[in-house]
Image (tube, rainbow, N blue to C red; front, side, top):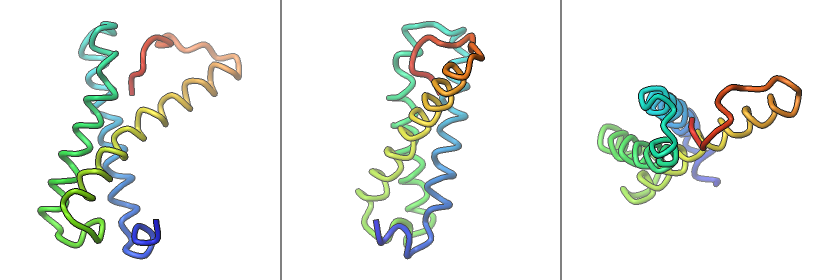
Length: 108
């Protein structure tokens, strides 16, 4: 974790998570909330995060301060973090009494 904070790559990792969140939202809305598609959203955003991590590594070789594998792995984790953040927000609004209409599935 030290390499992450010392190199200032936090912004890039957060950016990947936000982009993956938008991708997950687009997939969910584009599918018409189809349960079969929504079930695959975490896999889709994880893969998208890996691709974005690799793309950023190719553009900026010092990304992640490590090799290509670490760049892809941090991208995947960032993508999956977008799904986790969505679930935290959804569950916290559900607990506070505001019932969200998209309570189904693990979408972003």
